[in-house]
Length: 349
Image 1 (cartoon, rainbow, N blue to C red):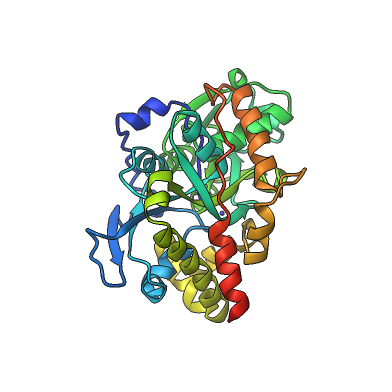
Image 2: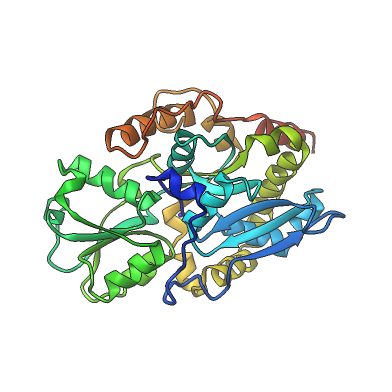
C-alpha cells in the first residue's frame, strides 16, 4: 500500500520544498501534526517519526492511539504529513529522526548525499500503486503522446517508468504533468489529464472518473516497491535504544491488529479519510511483512525478495532513467540488528 517516491531533484529537499495537498485529497481532513506518545518524555524530547497516506504505514496510527509506543518504552512524536514528498524532504534535512518511505526513495536520497538506514520492512506493495487511465486507453503503448500526471520523482512516477520501459516507451514519449499525488488524482478526475499514477487511498479518488480503469499496478512488478522504517544514521548511532523501541512497537502493533482487526481497521480508515469498507479493499494491495519475512528480506539473495538484490536492481534502473545523478553507496543501507533483537526477545516470551 504508501506511499513512497523517487527524488529527481535532491536540491529541492535542501531548500525545504513544501508540498500542499488539494482540497480533494482524501487524507487532508487532518493537517500535518505532531502527536507525542512517550514513556516519560514530552514531544520536545521525543524522537520524531514521520508517516503519510499509505496502507502499509497507517498502522502507526494504531500504535499511537493504543499507546503501544508507551508500552514499549518508545518516546515518539508521531508526525503526519499530508504530502509524502514533504516527509522525505524533512527526513533528508534531518528535521525528523525517522520516516516511513520506499526503498527507491531512500536510494534516491542517498544518491543525493543523505545518510539513511533501513531498519524495518513495513510492507510490500502488491497492487495499491496504480496507473489509472481514461476510457479509450487500453495498453501501455496507448500512453504515447498522452498527458500523464504523477508526483515527480515519487514512487508512482517510478512505477510509471517501470511500466513504460517494459512496453518499450521512453519518458519522452508522454506529456508528463508533475503534480503532488492528491492534486494529480484531482486533475485526472476533472479530465485535465489522460492518465495518472497514484497510490492508495488516492486510487479510490482517481477511479471515480467515469470510464476510468487500472492499466497496471505494482502487482505487475513483484518486489519493486517495498516500504520501510528509515532513520538518519546520526539518530541511529546516538539513540539505538529508541530505534529498537520503534521496531518493537511496530511488531506489537501487528499483534494488536491481529487480535483486534475491526478496531484497527476503523482507526486506519479514519486516518485515511475513507470508509471502513473502502479501506478493506486495500487489503490485497499491500502485504504487511511478518517478523519472519523481515528476517528473510535482510538476507542476501538473487531475486527481489532480498533487499540487497532489490537495491542493486533499483539503483541500476534509477541511473538508467536519469533519476539518480550519481551512483549511491548502498553498502551500509540496511541494518537488521533491531529486527534480529526483537526476534530474540520474541523467542524468550
